[in-house]
Amino acid sequence: MMLKFLLAQAKRFPWITNITWYSSIFTAGDLAQQKLHNKEKVDLKQTRNVAILAFSFHGNIFYLWLRLMERMFPGTAPGNVLRKVVCDQLVITPTGVSGFYIGMSVMEGKHDIFAVWREKFWDTYKVAIIYWPTVQLINYGLIPVFFRMAFFGSWGFVWVIFMSHLRQHRHSSENLIKNYGTK
Image 1 (cartoon, rainbow, N blue to C red):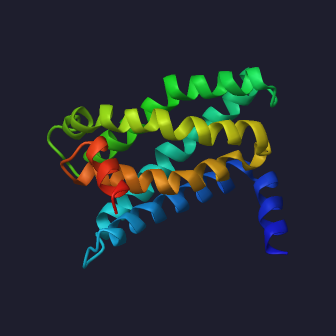
Image 2 (cartoon, helix red, strand yellow):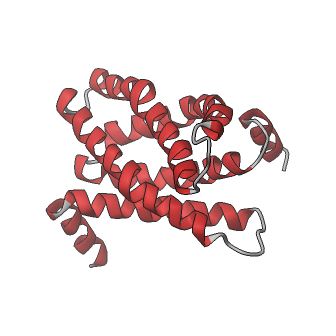
């Protein structure tokens, strides 16, 4: 019953439903990242910043992007799905990564808002070009259009754990993968 209600709302109010879902799950990823690293106290200011960034920037741009991709390359034909995924990797992935690092620096009042971006962008992008194409192949090929943002946001939960961790620690993505792979 509840699932039917949520699906009806997603179809009836696609923008706000999808943005809210995406922002909520993205924010939950930040909280999970903080708990995974045994922080005694959750940094609610950081989580608030992630929530604001997700709702004001990421959710909107990804929602509009998914709509644009469907208009430019409609349907689930393999060629169109592949075109969407390639466009994702070349345009929206670097935009999303940059928006996260720069946006968080702006909200934290950093003097050099590009410092974290310069330090972390390429490590993050290297992981993104492995992680996101698989997610988006499934998303564009199998998920109904009205539910793609929610699917994308669910995978964003894992992604924000990675990005938040990388942003707060001084090691590269290769070391992060190696360290987690041996546990």
